Length: 194
Image 1 (cartoon, rainbow, N blue to C red):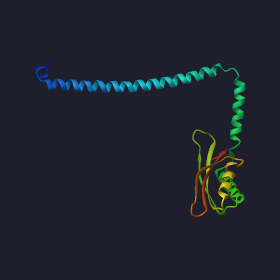
Image 2: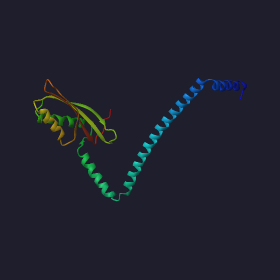
Image 3: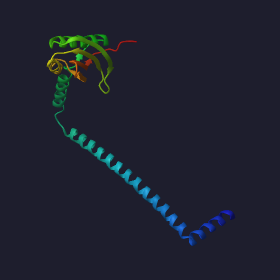
Image 4: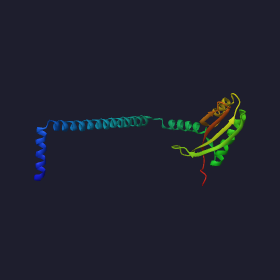
């Protein structure tokens, strides 16, 4: 140790021994550091416990799946459920055909429930995240309606043979006007080249 450093340490020791404010300050700083370290460690411990609980749940699911013996039966049940689910999807070869199918269906529904001044406009077409080969096609229907026609339209949309999802519904208060944004989900769609 250099003489200069030794002299500085000796001065600090003497100040620490003689001045109560310095001692209190040092102890307060150490207490704050200790408290902060304890809080950080507690957060780390809570995160580790949560991660461990998640891992244990996954292990238990894997063990219960491994104990299952009827794999062919489970596969058949999954295939039936998948077929029932996907039969509600629309089918089209291209984005243009998908848009035209949705626009035609919305025009037919509007005619069935006696809407007036119907305008159906295509919306966005985009792939669905985490669902390979499924595309979401949107369209907007704007029309004037008579009393209770909006309820018949909602019923027709809900009971359509293919799945239609209402993303947005606006009903005019002063004028009987309906504005609906509808999505349909298509399979077998090849994206159009740009």
